Image 1 (cartoon, rainbow over the protein chains, first blue to last red):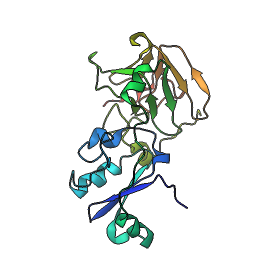
Image 2: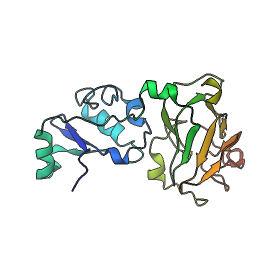
Image 3: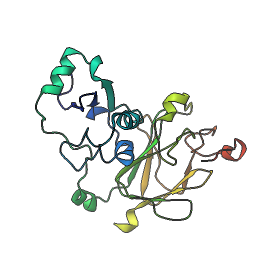
Length: 168
Length: 63
């Protein structure tokens, strides 16, 4: 029933579920909390990397709900079973390796998400207000609703404020 | 490689300016822009989304 690529991680208190098919690489999770969400590590989620409250806070910011969380006491039987399973090999949440990126000559892809952020992938630079180059990334998402608390990036606030984009 | 880099400039209190090598695709998968500069709305108030229409100056957008 569920996608075999889905994964779940627990610290005994809460369980974080990862649904790769929903991931648009907004990079919010690892920009906010690399101690827990580190695409370069296996498994890429380390539930011991931060307190439960901080983990749930960052999970709530995922713009597409590719990561979601639940209290362990609220888990279904199937979900409890999932926590007992051995860690399986995962798909890399970052789809490009550094070598692939160097070869890449395609234009940067800029996607306008319906009622959501501007998602950028590929080869690009982000320049801040003082002409400084901001942290390089292969993928990022810019806020379009005007209300993010981590400007200029999306933090999922558009879902709470009911931002709509009638033009699309 | 350098010259193909797209450049995203975050204009304080204003839009996102895109120049360089890029392609803008709307929510329906349609390519709407290939050449820059393009100014995309960041304040949420434009009447011409996804483009900037200067609304940020009137709605007091700040960050």
